[in-house]
Length: 278
Picture 1: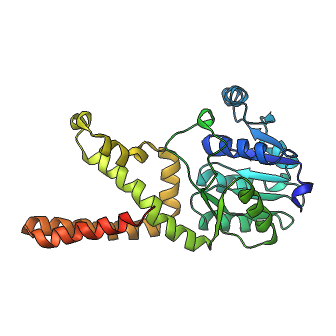
Picture 2: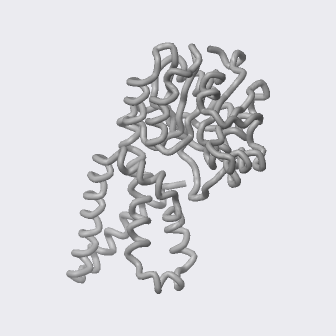
Picture 3: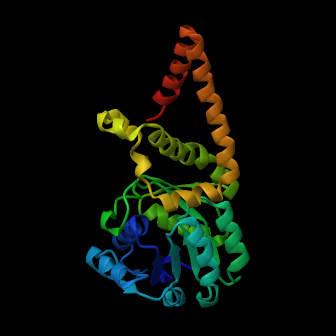
């Protein structure tokens, strides 16, 4: 399939990420008709008000039948179920890609469930926000952001062109390699923030500084989304929790011993690593 032959792009999961992608695609590809799925009357009204789509459909099956490209922008467990559900309805030659935050389980489900005449491309745009809902969607979200692509078929290069056209920087990785990297730089930090907030007595939170609020902003992220992410990357997240505990215990032991020099050295090591970030 060539970009010039793509007429209809369907999106299932038109929330913050899916809605932002719809806006970005509309701006960059005037020949695309962007069709979105509304799972309820309430969702239909919200999508109509948001004005991020060219057309809204209540049937995900109908969207699957029409779409040259079908985008799955839902939580990981929903993506896996959708790959089973939409199987019989996809157009021959269609491309399906997802925005899921873990890739191994999704790639396995796609390989198992999608027909041979349909190409699957695993994607993870590495951006986002603790904000939720299509009302927060913005077309500039993907500009300058990283997007992982974890498939190597011919269609993956067409999808890469789409991401680059809307301003993303594409990084290619294996599904396992992707899940290992993002576990360190995304999954573990989210888990640490959830844990930190739960550690602090609620009565003390009113005294929070702006620095504390900045640090824990991501603790407002979706419980359903992050439960899916943790459980579909369980082995790696458990391994990283254990590594994090080791480093926390290192701080604990030095504080308990009153070892000023080693504690200062450990903090300086963290300073040096953080200062390398742009």
